Image (cartoon, rainbow, N blue to C red):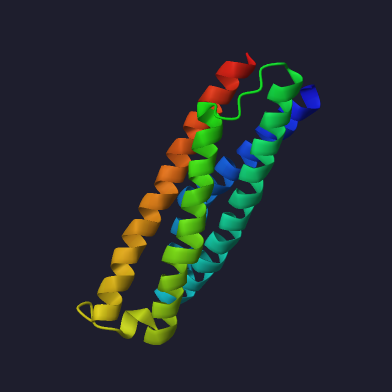
Length: 157
């Protein structure tokens, strides 16, 4: 049972740690170090896609380990709040990856170098709008993840 607890917490730690590293280290660093915003955007876009896949696998792993643990512990709770929040996190990752990021990538490809496109160009306006939604989705996933971490540690203690 302690191995299941460890794997459950590890999957959550990997996901949340990845989000925090991306938001507080990677994205600000590449935008301050790389010579163009276009290059930084390309690095951030590829990194975010990988982070989304990490989130999907980590979320599924968390659910599996948590459900097995609750089943073995005699208190099977498939609709526990922590499970519902992880499902919501997974849904947001899917929306961010296949909805928001997909549209942003198509717009970026259509515009070429985004910094050479006028601020009032409809494509750039749409890109900026989607970027706001992407940031909101990632922030929401992080907040939900912290709530799952709290609920999980409270339950395990």
